[in-house]
Image 1 (tube, rainbow, N blue to C red):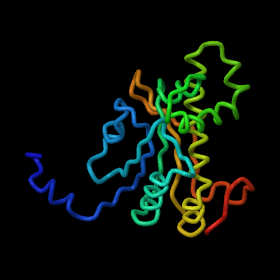
Image 2: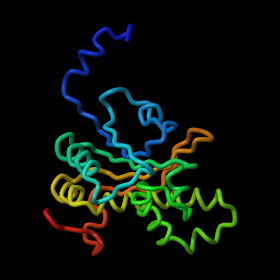
Image 3: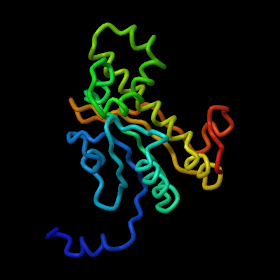
Image 4: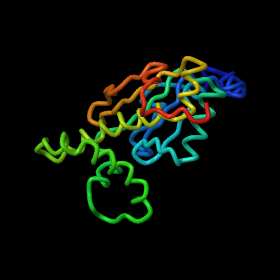
Length: 193
């Protein structure tokens, strides 16, 4: 801040980030550090296991504000290897209230169970479920009426799914959906456009 005496006065102006980050709450995965962005450059939403759940009004409110007001150009869903939420979802243990949240990840496991069960090692199964969860959350994002409307009328934003590797700090892309992807696909919703 010494080198930039006007740092705080610049932040007082309107925020105009190009990116919305939907990531895991894990303290080892700080979005601004990973992306090397400065304050005002990335809009952030975090929850356990980087989920995009259609009943989560908090996430939907962040998404709507980012897309309709901030006009972000890119939305990143970022998971990370070794995710405790995904690992917990792979068990049958009761964890109290979080069971309701983890049910969404259990659905991802069920959709891809045949592929995951082909893997022999538990770490490989966990990492594959983490990757598949990111892909499914990007698909959930694409199915929201907020994104569908924006793709139809605004021709944006791009959707990205990444997994962060805690071992080496590398972001590993899993999926990219440019604006308008699958607008004509029957699984996507068109309500409230």
